[in-house]
Length: 69
Image (cartoon, rainbow, N blue to C red; front, top):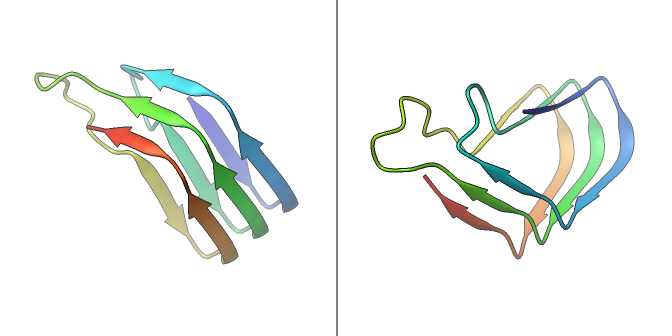
């Protein structure tokens, strides 16, 4: 649903991702990313139950999120 790739100083807040067909939130090759107050929901029978995928990133702060996958 949302990919943050090769970014610096990103703030993501106040969104809802419901039953995404792919990754809900992906953060790669990025620095100084703050994720707060987001809601991620996937039903129990969903084939995709990833919440937030991260890789090759630094200084990522994730707080006050509701992830139901």
